[in-house]
Figure 1 (tube, rainbow, N blue to C red):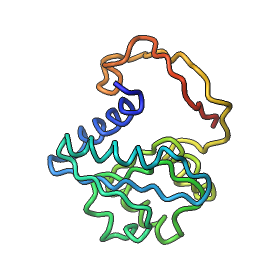
Figure 2 (figure 1 turned 90 degrees about the vertical axis):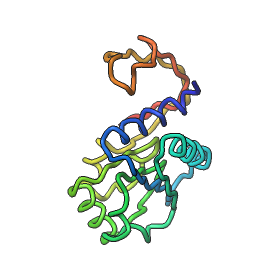
Figure 3 (figure 1 turned 135 degrees about the vertical axis):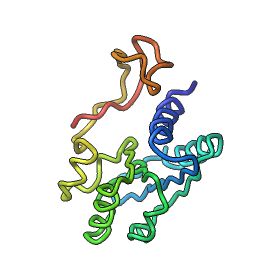
Length: 166
């Protein structure tokens, strides 16, 4: 399986384990800084994975959906390589309430490269992007091969990628 598909599948699997049968997920990919060329391919991959798993996927780069009414129909919101300051203060407050009410969040790739002046988001995403060296090969040691997100991986997974510093 393609490594990108493996990661996306693991993310979608984690989401489906936490939501009901009629799952609807918002994929948000607005960028206000660097734009990754992988965004369009990733959107297509998520749409395909959603279709194959009875998950309705909506994609947008518009912040108009970041209202109480707009977000309540989604089981989760995926920040797909979002960069820069993408939400205003009102939209940030709505998203915080959405998460606090039990909504899900998945950050893919550059999702940590946005909203640097919003400390709550930094805590949600776990860290802020600092930098990355040139792409290089790494060996990842799989410590838990019983979890659905890693069960299909070898004990040592070698991967050529862009490794982030936080």
